[in-house]
Image (tube, rainbow, N blue to C red):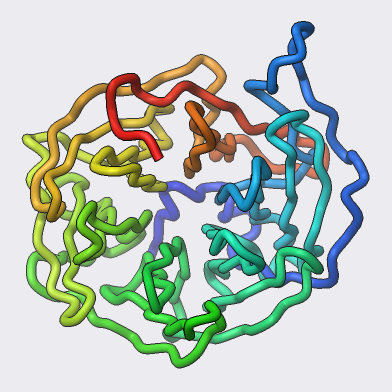
Length: 326
């Protein structure tokens, strides 16, 4: 079967690009920030050459973590200065990092793409705490969201989610595969992408790049039954990372170099398009995280042949005024 990786065209250059993490590296400034002359926090800063970023997560504190498709490194950057360094060294191109999330304490949850791995890493030491292998040949573990008691992972090539149970300390337990049914339609290629919770916390929201030209699904976490979210005619053909803040959902439309912003109802069954955020600095952004009044996105530069000297960066844009604050 021919597969189009959509948000990850550059994986074609290293189709197994998936991530494993090793021991922590130092925070020596391997990249220097493009700060402003008035001392303001930078709105754009470089990531290491050849890094091939995909996912981003922020916290605890004003620190962003980025995952590398190229070799599975995790890079930490100070939002105040833009400087940073690798805090967890990858195990090579067969073990990339796609999506990632911080639990706000001491643990990072990593998506291993075609390696089929769910990994947790101690963010302080960079040590891999746990690795689980899920799915079957062709599985692509894409993105992750944390909920009370579980971490949920998407599979872009199969109609299913993976639920990693968490104890009261956030440590991983059993993995359960949850088949997706109802309105879910699986395309012949890349289908599921970003994942978030509904505003009331009762269900999950998953981007489906195939159904109806690209849309959003509301998934019952108990049954896996998916229902189409009414977005008032808006489509998400390039929908990638999701970020929910209150009842405001930010969806990165990576190929369109845009973030579409929706106002959801409490249960996440309906959404109204509020606005679209664009920026000339966008170069195929993929995922998004928030700090204060800003959104931070890595530029994945899909379509640009990756080399060890290809430049990559992260950019900050303002959040939409007049909507939820956290």
